[in-house]
Image (cartoon, rainbow over all chains, first blue to last red; front, side, top):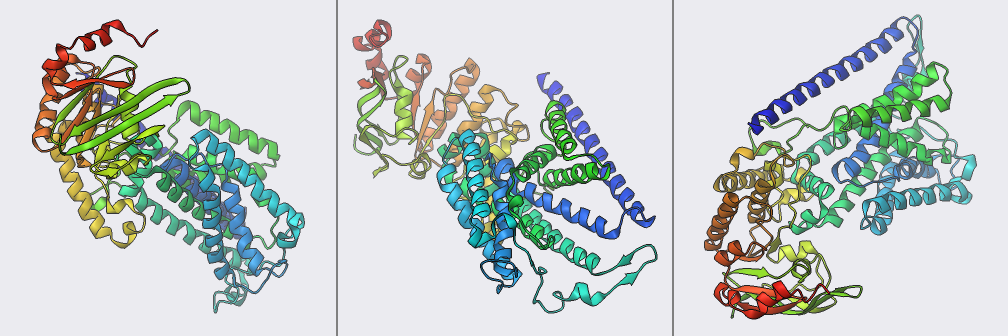
Length: 368
Length: 257
């Protein structure tokens, strides 16, 4: 009897989830159609459209990275902005003509340097904090992120300080074909629009950040369904139990922290090479909170939820701008959204579909 | 007493001014079901936490399977063959019973990051084997119908069975059970006793804390009685029952001054 009521309840819960997913898809498709339609009739410039897509991908990377830490492993990490900034600064300080250090390193090599520095910083932040209880981790990671921000602001001889770094080259500078492609294509006249260097370069940057997202998503989806991901979810739920079953909780948390930080860092790389000029504003804690909002909104532990959250963040930021609303309205909208989600849908819009078992181990297998 | 799977010597732990465990020296002989009883506050749970690595002792030593494990982390103790369960069953949020079972097996290749990408075939093979063993155990414990249920939705008694089944997947030499039948109805308690007997026949050694005297007296031999942080006596159910000091400890309540 009790079983029957429960399964009936679950069924209604499932249909509700299906309804929400359908509604979410409908809204996304409608928004995409509106933007493409706007472009066709001359309201939205193609460069802006490409920029919007890239920005959504960038926020998607921030939230995908945080989702590994919070959604998989339960780490309350408030140092997202530190790794976002690092991903921007490390390659730029090695490749930009305005860099106080050097401009001799090609940006692509700088990307790998950023990976190394990110892993080192993640270890430096992780070693003292990951053995702390979760609330202490929150405050310690926030503090360490502020330390990183202040170092980049004040250490002028290394970072250019508050005046920033200019002369950032294109990401593919020095690479045959790709390095000069945006210039080589030249201008294409479409009547209402002329597609020039700016558009082609934006498109190339969109492809770069798009491929970052694609690779990250595929990697994270696989580890989420693996026994590795299962251990992280066990630790999130009950660390003592994980330890009693022979899992080294500290080591697993460290792996999740480093992996998430590397994904977060990739967002910074895109940011730097699409902006020509970089200031320490990229270390502002607001980026940390945007990432948190995206993950909570999308559904903690869900990769597609994290991507969806990134899209919503862009919709809020650029939407308030399009309607001429001030930044305080933007923060208001974000706050209101969080309250509404927490009140009416605490598990997020697109929570993970339930059973996560290595797909090869049984017939079929779920997608997320 | 020739082949102990667990041996402690002068194990001591205090919290501030309160000495919870004071000089506990005991052995769990391989192949036994050893019971551990004692009034509230006798130091049984502290003792479990000390031998499983959750507390660090102030003094004394713990030896599991001939290896000194004093001061090791819980997961390291588990690697040496000692697995424990908890007094209040732990729930794994967002997992089905089947998934929660799969956390049990030790040294899974797929729990390392790189092999998930470099050896997906081996990981799948291993996962399939673990899944089969998990389902066998669920069947043996007669809870296979729960496999697809959320692990947070099943009853306390069912959760105890799942915990026991999952602990078996870790293939322990010694299983520490902390009050396995607390809050469990008599039918299920009998079933648990049968299962423990069965696993014991398969070669698992048990150390069980239990307040249900009927349950532990029927099941365990020998029984260790703790009182005020120290071993009061050790013997068969018969000896324990007829020992005046045990009755005194339970009724006199020397510790709750």
